[in-house]
Length: 328
Image (cartoon, rainbow, N blue to C red; front, side, top):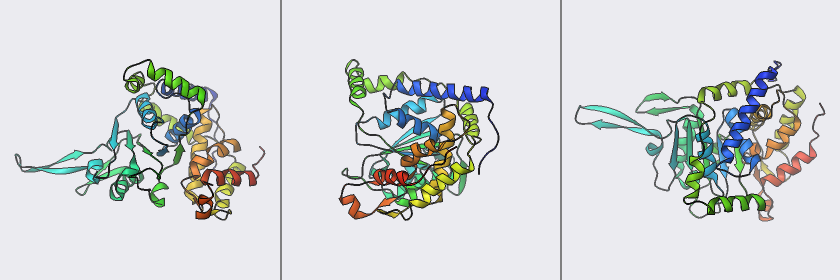
């Protein structure tokens, strides 16, 4: 699985410059939370989908809009509600009595970037329809398969399941998301900056997003994704990623651990993160940084630990402390 080729330094520098431009562009609308932004950009370069969780009012939707606008491509938003149907997401066929033919109406998934807002407010059948599209990269309407254009990325937001009117995603469906990114309350200095920015303008959120202009085209993004796949992974780093995932399966306090897909997600996003930071090789620190987002939705803490107030992130931190990282 390791890649031996070396990426030319000029190409690396160009990729790093593009990454910095994306960061700066997103920061025009989404202030702070730099680790969150980097993780989402890593998932983008790794060609995966992201689930973003946080309480209402932390800017989840704003972040996704800023990312989509930063990359010239088609963007759509689906507001999930308890009564939304699968056809509202994927599309459907209609009979036109005027010409006696069926016509296809494509749903909002026919875009490069799809914002699935509050996905955990939708019924299971509609959730499953979207997640099937994510897995297959195509939509079947009335027996006809329609391939989705690349790049294709779903960024789903959800409020914590304790919020009223939400439905937890099944574990098998959660596993389809490359990362589950947690947005927490910002530090005081960042929150003050947000407050000042918002109170100095009318319709502040709209103005934030409208300032964001494309800095990267879909074709250039596809090239970056191909470049990320050629970032070198030392066999010792690969083995470290696998040890982390295998340890989750019999670690005290974890009821069910991560599958092999967890190790794949960890290595894929670590390659992308290395490229974002101007490197053509993955370090153990890359894996440590990404482990919570790559694994928090792939492990299940035991019920008694949840009652005690311990969560998946705490268990992952304990697990990482017990596994020795390789020295390169």
